[in-house]
Every structure is written in structure tokens, then in C-alpha cells.
Length: 141
Image: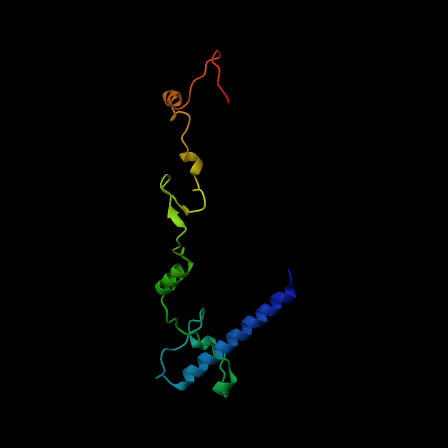
């Protein structure tokens, strides 16, 4: 365990706590008409924080977090439009398989749509091809 690294982290956290505490005290000293009051997580009241009197507001660091102007749903819609598959002419739906593919590529499962040996019957084979016996000859010219 690197103790020097841990000591640096503890110093950073202490400084951040002191900065936030001074901001809280300054907001409390401005008066009760300012709202909403800032609050540090983990502290139940401002009595636990060290008092910081005599400092002006410009000598401290103020943290501001702007509110998001775009909702999460709109961000999601923008991302979807940006990352969607663009419409192109070479993206087609294959007639045999029903899968979407590029026109110059075979579909992903093209082998499963080939006709198997059970689909081609021996009757069709006899119609399309001549069945040669061992005693018959073929005239080749």
C-alpha cells in the first residue's frame, strides 16, 4: 500500500471539505433571505463546520454545476439517429431466406437454405438425367 498516495488523497479531501464549509458559512452570513441553503453531505447542521469569519467571497473557489438543458430521452433519440444503420441501395431482403443482407454478399445462414438430398427425389433425377446401364455406351463425338 502506497501511504504517500493515501496521504495526498486525504489532504485533497480535507481541502475540499474546508472549501465547501467556508461556502456554507458565507451563504449563512448573507442572511436568511437567500434560498436554497447549501448543505454538505454527511453533516447534520452547520454547527459542526469550522467558522470562517473575515474572508471575502472572491478569495474562495465556488463550484457550480449547470443544469442539463437536454433531457435524457432527447439525447437517446439523437444517439439512435446517429448510430442507426443508414439506408443504402445495396441492403436488400433476400427472397429465399428472408434475411436482410448486402446485395453482393450471401445471407448469413445461406447453407441451411440449400436443397438437401431428401428434397431431390430419384424420380426427378431420372427425368433430368439419363440413367446409364453398364452395357450401354455413350456416343461421344
